Length: 555
Image 1 (cartoon, rainbow, N blue to C red):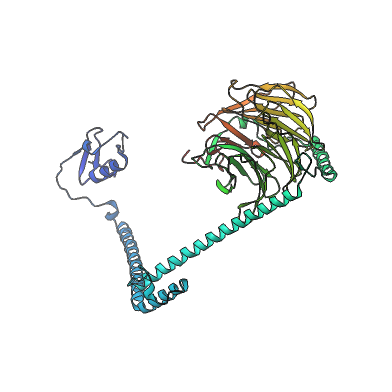
Image 2 (cartoon, rainbow, N blue to C red):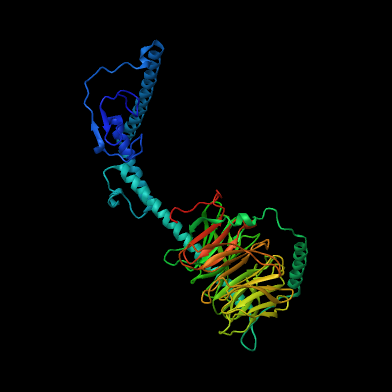
């Protein structure tokens, strides 16, 4: 009789009443405890299924290794190695015991010295106390070493408290600096006869700078080819969710806006919890959290090439944040020129100016370096209000969407309304210019409309959802080859020309469970998509085997 596991004659044989195989008792019991299955047939097996076989006691035959001189020498060699290892372990234990004994003897030998050290440290931290008798329990412990450790712990706590107070003082000082800056800007602003602020306006130097930037970018665009590194349509069709990161608070979930700095692979999100979050996609960690707004963050933008982030909020303010050497971002300017919720921020191609739009039906043109408002355009009409905005890639045209279903095109140099696009139903939730400079995509309750800026007319419309379900976001990728639409789901189209059909490449469901995708952006070369929904998680869509992304174990 041979054991089915070890291949040797068993000392305590047992038989499985299911398979009939013979096993060594201790081996099969260990296997059942670990796996619960028969090692041969892989069937479910329990201890109750084993039947003990009674056999006569026999002398166990000598192993093949012990039947020859070379085999015996090998056995002796193995036993010698085991003995040396055991001896080494005993020496290690002896060394550890000697160390512990030496430490105990040192403490007993230097009780008086430890007591003096304890007294000195306590008197240093509390000059008003004059002796060890003033030590409160547990500092009056009979063990001087224990008392000294407790004094050190208390000193560390007091040091940490002092550092916290210093950090609070620095934050208060920074807020005071912001308040002083706001007062200086307010002092510079003069009031006109109608009690409205007189803005300095966009001067000829700035106009010349904007014009030069437009000429340079438009010239480069005509020569630019679609990059060879751009993701192919077939590859994009295989995209799926590859990561989900909980960035915002669980008690106030919802990501309302996001932006991507492709050069650093950092994603910025703005949430209902009044914070902005900068997330490093490569490391999978939050690099900084922007706190300061008192209401939801409705828009967030990077200033490319600079350590600046812009946030707009429902608290009617816009904040300009600058990165520091330690990776954190400090608020440098608070812009308070709007009287209603700020809906969108867009940064000019020069990275020196920005425009903010608000539900107070005005848009403001700012100098980023000073945070000063150069001009404010519009009238305070509560029934209207701007809900979205974007600069044209060349920088001389500004597109805005309104709560009244209108799309307005502005000449930035003259701040004049040069064109209006009608036809939407409901608030215009998003506007996006294509990199080719010819197409404008706008989203509203009735879906997405595409406009030809050369002929100023609508040439195609998408109505992917029912009339009561708005489209929340629309976005071209940087190459102008793909268009993404977000609402109850996510849809990506291949960009064509005015006459050809724009094909739907793929549709992804909203995996947040809220049924509302609020924002999305393409990564560099469309190698991934960042998606925000009405839960607190940032989701990344890309190829499933992309090793740089990990799905969080909680999602």
